[in-house]
Image (cartoon, one colour):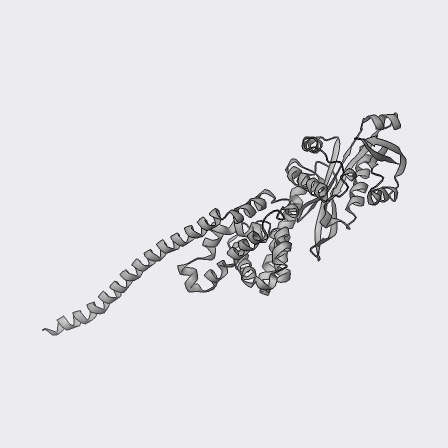
Amino acid sequence: MPEWFYIITSILLPLTSVISVMFVLIQLRGSSNINKSNYLLTLDKYFAENKGMQEIYKILSDNIECQLVCNFEQIDSSHLSTYFTFLESFYPLIKKRILAKSVLTVEELYNLFGHRIFSMLHNKKTQMLEIYKFKDHYDNLFALHENLIIYCIKKERKVPNIQNAQFFLEYGKYKEKHKQMIEKQIKKAVDMNIKKCNKTSHGFDLVFMQLNVKLENITMKENGMIRRAEPADLCAILAIQDKIIDELSDKSLFIPTEKNNIKKYIENKDVFFACVKTPCGVGAYSYTLFNDSSDYIVENFKNKKVALFDSVVVMPELRGNRLQKTLKEFSCNQAKKANQDIITAIVSPNNKYSLDNFTQNGFEILKTIKFESFDRYLVYKNL
């Protein structure tokens, strides 16, 4: 054979081998993509067909703005653990680069499960019910959260309820540079919420408070505000009312307001319907009717402009923060601005806490009246 033949062969053979390897790799890559698609579909199908997780996801979705009233108590506690265990299994899949390429990337995880993950992890109630109690067993969950939230921040992807990520900074072992990035985004989210509330306050003042919120023996400082209630708050307000009724042993202490009336009061500009909005959601509310013309008002305060401080309700988890007193004072100020002469309220003689709260804040007992067949004190205060 001529020498040139050996030279060409020596060049072509390795090149042919390289091309063959590349072809095999391309085939394997295609197969890997197919397997990955099947894997992701299997994950999604498992989540969608698991009744326990779907039940929890519905509760989370229905209570985005009022997380403290998510009703997890009526579901099997094992379902909550299953949901978290399912989420925790994602971290080992993205931990190593080889797995991230062949099984699941952080981007794919966010695109498919981002909302389902953050709606669970950034929910105040689930944080207290599950993660805090078993935080030593959820290392993968904290690591998953750190990976996923940093990816979202860097890629400018939306993170639902990011203000509630502070919980993970307090109890997780996050990198310092990541902590700073997350804290910056939390502040940005809180500032945006405050601006949003300012735009929808309907001309009423806003009060910003520091609340010591006690949940499951945890004390957290929360920025809270009092603002006028909006139609979007109806769900949260009804949920608070239902919770109070369920927990009362003496049902005569609290007379619930019908849904249609609450809706009407929220929409009526002559009713000051205030709610305490915290990063956890609506935690308390009260409403005051200006120029009230109820029979017992007209009978006892003739020729006077009277505001009726009709109802004040505070979530059990937020009691001890002087919210009833604050709401009462705030309503009195609004009544003065509305040129009311007197502010009144009706209080059960058996509700010592509320009665003391009124009398200690300048209200006097006028008389006992019948209200929906129950004895009530009619209390008042000159404005």
